[in-house]
Image (tube, rainbow, N blue to C red; front, side):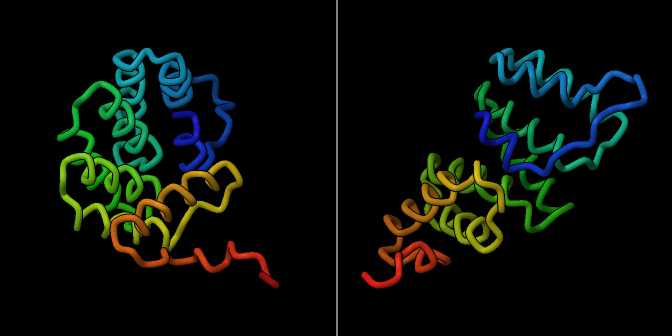
Length: 152
């Protein structure tokens, strides 16, 4: 889920010389070393327990290793701290849809699309969320009209 790292706001370079557990976790996650990544992210949280970037990576990691209840709880914690966190809404939407919680999934898809990430790498995920929402509701998703070329 390399795209996921791009949904989350960028991190500052670590110039202090201290270990960058967040970046280490991202690399381990990229290598699909999920349990080691989780350890690194937990170490990063030790210094900043309310860091929503780290918490979202923890939720992603939980999802990869099948700890879905923990992923949901972690995404909810992110939303408690940052109610418009796009990555948390996206993650919750699809976790809820996988569990058959259609209305909850729709709610989070709509929240994601209200404040989507503004980075080019997120485009396909925004499109996926729109298509999913349209399939669930039969209605055009918010912002979809902006993608229709003029003159057609």
